Image 1 (cartoon, rainbow, N blue to C red):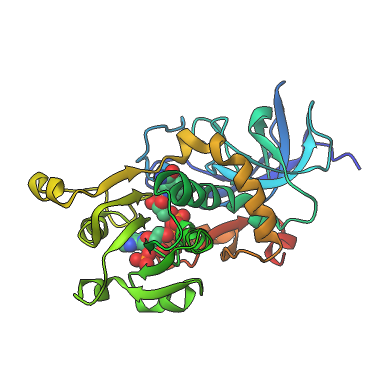
Image 2: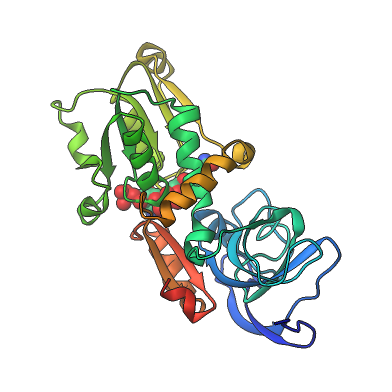
Length: 326
Ligand SMILES: NC(=O)c1ccc[n+]([C@@H]2O[C@H](COP(=O)([O-])OP(=O)(O)OC[C@H]3O[C@@H](n4cnc5c(N)ncnc54)[C@H](OP(=O)(O)O)[C@@H]3O)[C@@H](O)[C@H]2O)c1
């Protein structure tokens, strides 16, 4: 059934001022320019990148007012290239950065940013998997190049990227230690890793690691560098615990540990095929990625869970009650 777009009203989270959370408002369903697809959003990710945009603390920012949301999933309402009703996700094409994104019931996205999703995939998983799956794949295989038998630590091991990095490193044959910052997270580290508290790492009984996947940054990165054997690698994914990093260069040279950046924005294409395979495995339950789900009205709670590091896995908003239960 065709869903008429023109003249209809639709809900959107509109950002009016950087530093304040967007407000849920009614607005007309947006018009679709040529080369774009109109999507009815079923679930949208709340990611650290989105919060940085809301705060006005990212290198690419929209003119305001604007609708944030860099990744979302839903169904095609109107498009020149995709059939109506097709389940899709989107990421890129400036969505949620330079132009309106997915924190809306209806949004218009460049055709090139729209990717079909297999039928039957939970929309929250469809909108959330790519960044953690692609990043974990890149970090474990391309950047840290984890090999069988190695000892690997993953920090933020109950977080979104961390959860998947633990599982992929274990599959690669590594002995994995999942490091978390607070006790409440210990039960949420995937079973394929030994879960420990960051504070326990300081104990001399912990053997050095061959590689570290650090999703936390700040002082955690500094501490982890000291836990790696000479010639080992640290793949740096994120900086939730702080953007600053200082090193004593003499110690750094003596330690001979490679500090390697992981950059999904630049290398997303490289892992797109692997990420699609990981989506199938996630959907089948062969891999796990917890997702906290909130209705759009509860954005403030969702954002707070993510910002404070309390969230377990990913955080998603839904505009459609069916997406709360998938
Ligand atoms: N480089 C890339 O291409 C790339 C791609 C995707 C994501 N990222 C970045 O990678 C990082 C992790 O992403 P994610 O989706 O896995 O995030 P996440 O699920 O929130 O996990 C990050 C972990 O950081 C710790 N944390 C969070 N907030 C904190 C705070 N305020 N203070 C101290 N620790 C805090 C928490 O671990 P504990 O509670 O265990 O300490 C949390 O589980 C983010 O910075 C994200 O922007 C980078």
